[in-house]
Length: 117
Image (cartoon, rainbow, N blue to C red):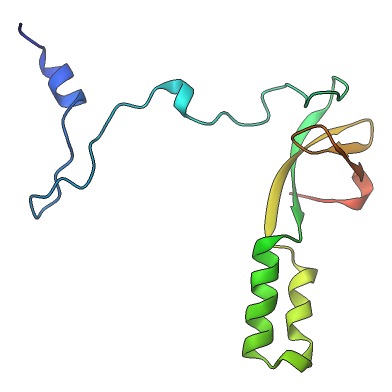
């Protein structure tokens, strides 16, 4: 059976300069690509009419920065605590009626308590 040139290119494998094939270039279906959360759907149990937004919060990246600053500038100097003034972590939240909800629908508090990007 004859295949067209497009199909052969589509199923080809990527070869680096050394001749090795590091990974196959398999086609990616649209359903495999993550959709953005601003798709107009609120989390389960949240009222309609809100918007998705991104907030900064003190999470794992901020803690790592805190530990790195403390290690570099002496644990007792307090420099590590400065990391919490500039949160490094981000997450998507749903904002409606002045309330902020996470991705699973849990209320996180009032919108005035968050730093939106």
